[in-house]
Length: 211
Image (cartoon, rainbow, N blue to C red; front, side):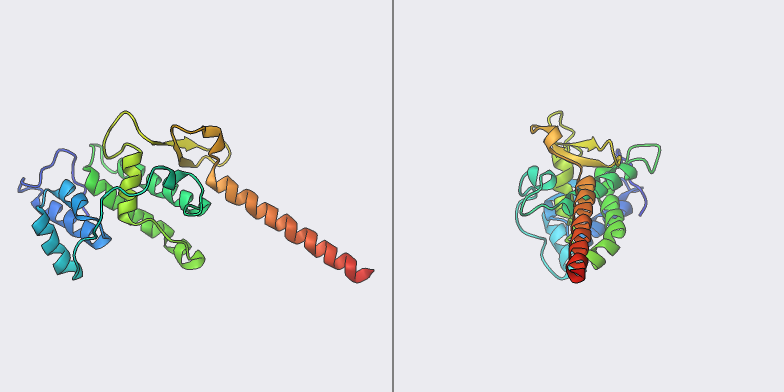
């Protein structure tokens, strides 16, 4: 998919086909109508037509932004460390897609390109660990909370670099950063804990058999 420059317009004949490809890609990814309309300037009626033609269904219902910034950054019953790592992977893909050309690229194109890269990188993880991945609407919300979609000075999420493994992961700005640990290191620590427990149980079982 050809990168679309930030200053390109859908009504420019030089970029009309690229914007149509972007709309098709966003539809196939399951983006909500308002996201597609924002980045392609297609009217809502046209977006509905494209959805019907390509997927045989109407665009997903509901508001574009759902949940809160904490959903993407703070472990809870709905957000695991693995989910936080996926957020970090997607944000890394988005950052990378911003440097594919020497000139800034259009944010809708960058969103879709990053999302497709994220899906490719996490395909094996999904198949082997059965972990639910972000959908493109969640990815858009994550970028918005980070300020990438609004370019606002006040953002709810920011990236923090782990001093141990060097991963950049999202944290809630208005909460204590030292309490929002690295998800990769948290999973590693948990694996070590389980390994030590298993080893201790094995030693205990061996001892009981010899006595």
